[in-house]
Amino acid sequence: MSSLLSTNSVDPSYPTFPILSSLGIVLILLPSYWHFKSGNVGTILYIVWTFVGSLNYLVNSIAWAGNLHNPPWFWCDLSTALMIALNVGIPTSSLLITHRLYSIATIRQVNISRSDTRRTKYFEIALGVGLPVLAVILRVVVQGHRFEIIENVGCWPSIYITPVAIPLVFLPPILINIVSTVYAALAIRAFLKKRKEFSAILASAHSGLTIGRYFRLMALAATEILCSLPVSIYNLVINVQVVHPWISWDDTHFNFNRVEFIPFAFFDLYPRSWIMVNISRYSLPVCALLFFIYLGMSGESGTFYRRQFWRLAGALGFSTPSETSPGASWIARPGASAPSQLRSLPPIVTAVSVTSTTKKETSSMYSLSDSLSDSPDFNGEKGSGDHSYPPRTAPPAEVHSSVV
Image (cartoon, rainbow, N blue to C red; front, side, top):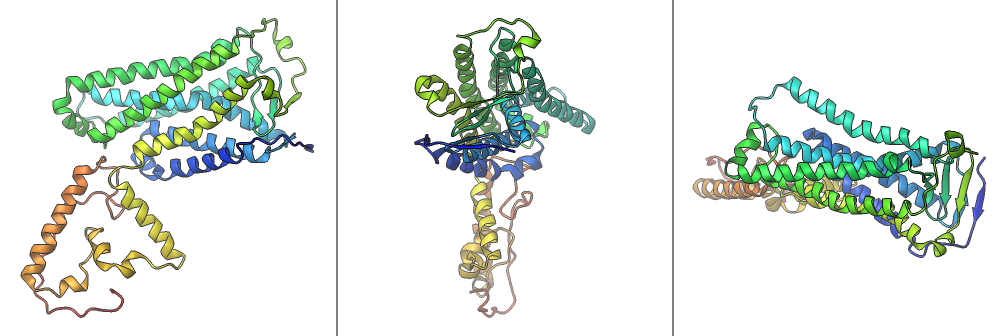
């Protein structure tokens, strides 16, 4: 049975964080379909960890807004374990991305078997999930009590700061970011050496990447490193200022089942602690925004989002562009049949104008596209190349009201 304690200490910034966290969830999910379809383990894990972490912090921020209460036993145990896993999970995702980019840039074997590809994916999944799970297990060694409840924040993990906590909790994200930085530097170095034939290298690796997408992935990983590494170092420096001696397991876990409640007024005395709490929380919406900027705004993404929006609008009974603007709708979707207004033109005019316009738009689309095999075209399928329409010799068609 949970007990509820209402207070008057309301976070003056509320509901800024719940709004930003909700926006982050939407942004990380919008381009997720393409990345799950492409099978890039690093980006998939980045999406999963960011989504789960944002949802976790969102629920906590709403449930504990202006109050302190002890929830059902399982929630905070699960929530705090996810927070510890996130501390390692997102840096590990960036490590997998930079390692993959380095492997592509230094590829030596042209034809890679499916078994090798499958084995590589299994290894990446084991690393991207196994390291966060290991971090959760190791944290138990220095877990002084079950968890803490912070007013206006929610569940928070308990860590008893001893010399043992430094290598078990605070060093792993720093080391992972350093290794990821090394792979990123080596990948850029390999690109500079082979920049003239780099497009051929990407094609031979069957990576489904263009140079543009390659560097957007690199930019995402590099930005995450630049944000995460200083924060992890700052977190280490702040926490090691007061280090308790390690005496024994029993001493560290004395009265383990207790739950500590921290009122919002506590941070008036310790403002740096409030800064660290907010850095941990707001880093998730930032990760989602970075992902959307780098990988969710490529050339074909806007058309895909509009298409899904109008599909939803049509399902809700609203009029769609295909019902009100036939010319624009047809031009935006290569491969669709020409509107009856254009079919009514003389045969030669129809052949020249339709073919030249479609070729121009198709080449423009693929010159700006940053994806190859794993990105849908305007029809939501694999790229289908050039679309041209033969001269029509049939009599001029009648304009129907359904087309108009």
